[in-house]
Length: 308
Image (cartoon, rainbow, N blue to C red; front, side):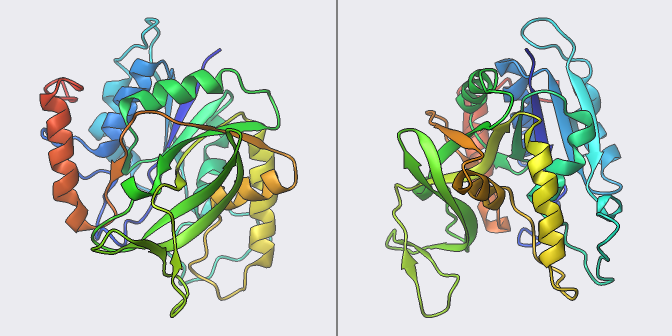
C-alpha cells in the first residue's frame, strides 16, 4: 500500500507579511516545505500533492516540484507530484462569494480541492511548519494500518513548544483518552507571556490559562479518502450557515474532526514522536527558524543543500 503527503500552501500569510510558504529560510534558500518533502520521501511517501493558490504553481514547480519528479522513494519508485488549486471556482453554486472576500475558506476547503488527485491514505500538513524527521515515519506506519472508514490519526506536539514570543497563535488544543483524541478545540489567540505563562486571550478581559504540557494539533493529520465525503458535507453546512456579509470565517479541519469524534463517526489515534516542531507566524520568528535549520544541516540531519 502507498501513501500521499498533501501540503497546504495556499494561505495568505497575513501575519507574516508575505509568502512564508516559499520564503527561503534555510541556509541555501530552502523553504520549510522543502524539508517536509525531503523527510516524507525518505520515510516512504510515494506522492506529494501541493495545494496552491491561483498563479502559484509555477513558483512551487521551480522551488521543488520539478526536482521531485527526478527523485525516488526508498523502494526505488519514482516520486509522483500533483497540484491542486484552492480558489473560489470550487465553491458550491448555491453560495455567492462576497465581492470583497480575499481570504481562502480554510483547511477543510483546501483538503477538498486535493480530492481529485488523492486516492490513497494521506497525511496533510501546513507548508510553513517544520514537523521533524521522525514524525513522517511515525505517521506513515499508522496510515498504512487505518481502516478504510472511521479511523484517522494525528501527530501531537506540546503546546509550550509551539507558541511564538512575537504574538498570538492558533492551535487545536487536544484532550486525550488512552491514546485517542477525545476532543480538539481550535483556540485562535494563544499568547505566551515573558514569565512562561500561556493563555487563551480570545475573549477580552477573560483570559483562560492553558497547560504548557497540553497536546496540540499542528494540522499534521492522517486520513483515508473516506474523510472527503465528511469534509464535503461539513463544508456545505458551513456555507449554508455563513452570514452573507461574512468575509473572513474559515472552515477548519480541527473543528470537523471534533464534530466527527463527538458524533462517534471517527476515532483518531494520537501519535507522539521525539520530533521537534518549529514554524513561522511572524517575521520576527524567522531568525530563530533560520538558525534551527542551519544547525540541522550542520549536524548532518540534512545534506549540505536540499537543492542539489
